Image (cartoon, rainbow, N blue to C red; front, top):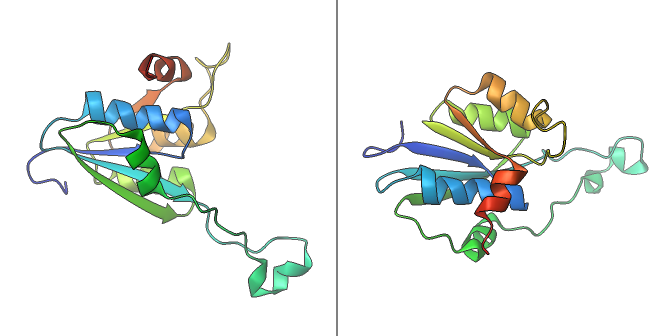
Length: 151
């Protein structure tokens, strides 16, 4: 593990309230002093736009939004004794998070699923992470995210 004095907790974050709740849970409840919480934002790889005239031109790539993970996490202002790292990687979210789980003690995810099917169905990223993670996985459901929201 990367953290010499504590655990490494990887959190998949995507800028949504559910991802924010997963990070909040990891920092406030899951982590302790000496632990490292690694918030990971996975962006899709730059790909050419299929079926357009841009497909053969370098300027036909899908632009990235001006989203800053560091700024987003700073705005959340979550108080913690753990060390917080942020990383932005490019690739398939499930693949990148499962890969990150190999060096982690815990993987924390928020899920967008809710309603009657929430007990039976995870989103595709969550399902793949639960299935293939190399460490235990905590899934923060919409109900749990609501409980964590500030009053």
